[in-house]
Image (cartoon, one colour):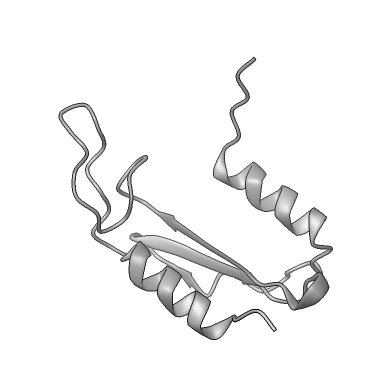
Length: 93
């Protein structure tokens, strides 16, 4: 059996699982290049950061192209740098 979950559904499941408070704030960034939304009032001091680019398709942002049939990576954000920054700011106790 194959189960497909899109990114919006995954975020909703994370928010429900972590008992995050309703986020009435508009996205921090919402322009023609990408959208960034953050939920920080979650169980166990968890934080969810969600980036949605308008380009890139299903590829690693700022990564190298995977091949002829793959989507070109987004050049709007650098996923590696964002992950590094996130983990530096949110260390485990």
